[in-house]
Length: 247
Image (tube, rainbow, N blue to C red; front, side):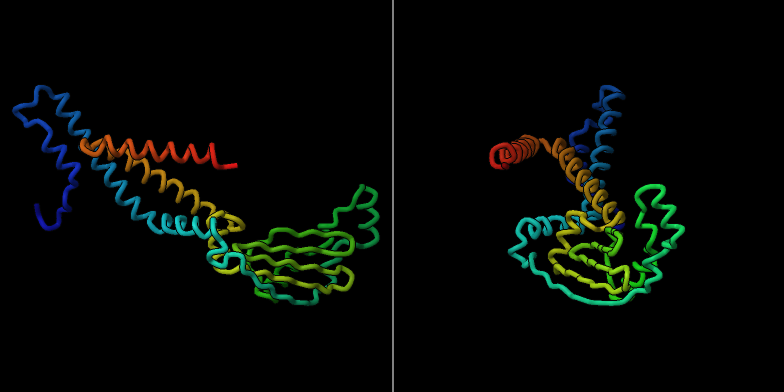
């Protein structure tokens, strides 16, 4: 073996030693079956090792945040602080399309759609730039006298209450701290579509790691029995806890 060749897995080596020699092989079918078996082991082992390393950060993150999510009081996960602010908006943004003719037309058609009376984009951008608001726009409600704008993000919330007549608003930003942020990331709450895809990919990675580990145990004769028994006991314990102790 040259220096550049990677060391062979003990599982693959064991299969090679146990495979019959060229002189002892009774049929081509058995040789082909043994070759396919070795290739399957190599592929499964490769997937198990490199997918595990690729998903190492995700496994550690979701493992640690599982603890912080289950016991937030251990890590000050309930801590929060608020910031209050006031400001003024251009009243033209709050009365778009409210000419007498437009109002009469909307009333004739039934209940008016108040959301079209406000320049939402201008209002949202002004709030973001003026108060460094982060998070995604979660809600924008408009009634006859007031607008309510809400932003949500991991461990964060901002709510603005705007008077449509004067343009004056009050803003409350709530910060829940680092532990709340990573807990929301674990749950995928208010994290957006990209992080949602990360959670899905992490779930696929963990599934591949588990299945390839299970496949590999079948190629270890000495550990196959004990390994399967342990996995079965673990599954039974989880099911028993769900049935007996979960309300």
